[in-house]
Image (cartoon, rainbow, N blue to C red):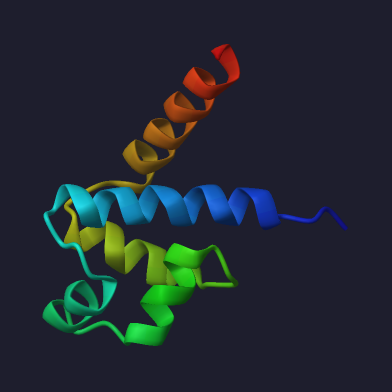
Length: 83
């Protein structure tokens, strides 16, 4: 079975970037303001095991489709690969 740790970490960094773009410096404040369990949200940003439901809920908060989220993620990876 493939270890997906790197991919989960990349997703977590992208979610964190969305939070920062929304001008939330604290993950706890973001979670509280959007009625998300703090620990669950922290796990997502940290790239630990998370559910697709949690990711979809966060993307909905940011008014972002899953397709757009992963396109942004892919674009960031392509830019890093060029460097």
